[in-house]
Amino acid sequence: MMLEEIVRSYSLAKEIIKGTVLKLLRCHRAEDVREVLVGVGLQVVRVYIERDTAYMFLTRSMEKSRQLLCILQVVDSHETCSKCSLRSLEQFQVELFEKHICGGSKISIFQYSLVLFWRNNNEDELWRSRSLFVIGGYLLVCFEDFMQFSALSIDASSSTYFSLDSCCSITDVSEMVIEARESQCITLAVERGTPEFCPSTTITNKKQQVGLDKEKTAPGGSVKWKLKWFSEESLYKFVALFKAVHAGATMSPLLVRCIS
Image (cartoon, rainbow, N blue to C red):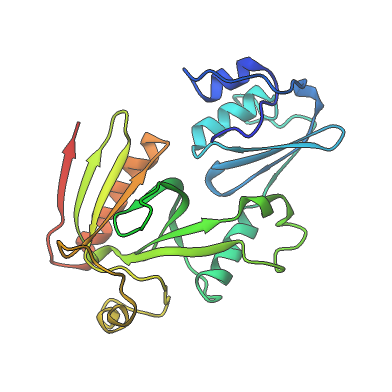
């Protein structure tokens, strides 16, 4: 669910989720906002209201987060800050990702997006909310504990904020099916996947490593991953980045199909 609470009024809900009927739970004035925390890529926003009331917004979209900040009068169209405090926790998130997922290695994140994730070798076959990272030649699908988000700047070492769900090399994806428009979904045919990620693993020795930890494959020989996006811009950025990395890392063809 994108909104845990409605912060300002019913009109705010209509701005964030158009066409969805929501019940008004609480109402606040924009001037009562005293602090706003944002995460990597403006995918998540936490708003603190006077009298110790706080709300978490998983917008999963930079554009929706910007709209939210404007509605709350935290920033205007010229990116001018209001009197309330606006802080980014991006540095803490990146440090925890490097610590919990990359074994402390410093890495470059090419793309980070909050998506819904489905995999055909999951027993329950449910869509799960996950954080997707594109780093180097790999896709990492992680669980991110947003219940700890507000405390990252205070104590970022007590527990695991990120945990790895699935990982694969971009070169091990043989097919990409793009369902743009309303569904905003991408399906990947993953020939090999692994529940572990070794940052030191290179393209040349990757096959020996993956051979030890590879996921169970479907009867057809590959695992199907589905990624549902909440931003068309992020979806197409992912497609362009994925195709570029794949083309630069392997001579094997990548079949790309678009369906409406």
